[in-house]
Length: 338
Image 1 (spheres, one colour):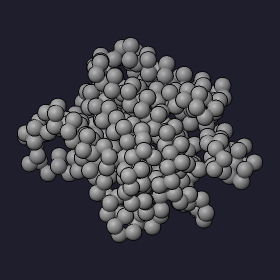
Image 2 (cartoon, one colour):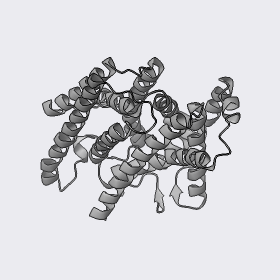
Image 3 (cartoon, rainbow, N blue to C red):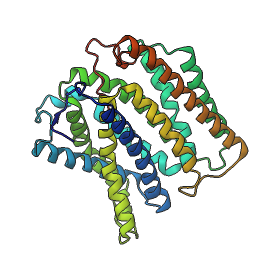
Image 4 (cartoon, helix red, strand yellow):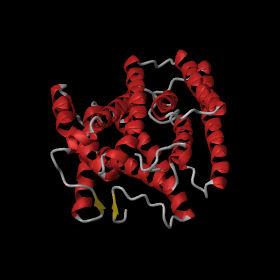
C-alpha cells in the first residue's frame, strides 16, 4: 500500500507499469466483489444483505485503523468538526452500499449490470447541472444506447423483482451523488481519501447496526444454518474485505491514471459481469427480447469506452498526457475521488 497520506496525488514518478497494474487491480476488484456478493446472497441464500453491508463497514474500519496505527496510511485524528466537514457523504456511502447489495441479491447479474448503467446517465446530468461539464454528442449517444438497451431488457425480464429494480435505481442516484460530493469534499474537507473512507464507515456503523437489529436481520443471520461451511465463511469474509479493497483500488486507478481511465475500466468490467452472470447465481431467465436489450446495452458500453478513450488522445497530446482536466475542471485539478 505504501506510506501514503490521504491527500497525496501520486502524480510524480508514475510508471506505465503502475498505471497498468492499478487499472487491472481496480477491474479485478470490481469484478470479484460483484461475483462474490452474488454467490453469498443468492447461491448460498444468505438472508440479509444488511448484515453483509455491516461486515463491509467493519472491515473498512479495522483495516484503516490498523493502517493508521502502523503508519501505512495517514489521515487526521477525530475532532468534533469532522462530521460537519464530511456530511452528507456518510449517509450517501451507507445507502449506496446497502441498496447496491440489496439489488445484487434481488436481481440476476445481467439485469443488475444493465440497470447500473443508469448511474452514468445520472452522473452525466449531475455533472452538467453542478459542474458545468457538457458531454459530446457521441458520449450522449452511447449513454442513451446503454439506458435504452437496459429499458428494453427490463420490458421482458421474466424474473422481474420490483424491490430489486427500486434498490438499483436508488443505488444509481446515490452513486452519482457520491461522485459529485466526493470531488467537492476532497477539495474542501482537508482530510484526504483515507480519512473520508474511514470516517464514512465509522459514523455509519452504529446506525447501520441499530437498523439491522431493528429489522430482525441480525437474528436471521445468526440462525443461518451454513455458518459451519468453511467455503461460505471464506466467501463471506472475502466479501467484507473486498468492500475496502474496491474503494482502495478505485483510488489507485484514479490516482495513477485518471477518473477517465477508471470509468473505462468499470465500463468494460460490467461487460464481463453481464455475460458471466448468465451462468453464476442461477437466477437469470433467458428471453430473446431481454437478451437483445442486454446486448444493446453492452454495445453502448463499448461505444462509450471507445468514444471516451478517443477523447483522451488529443488531450494527452496537448497537455503532456494528463486527461484529468477533461473531467474535473476545478482550479486545483485534483482527481483523487473514490
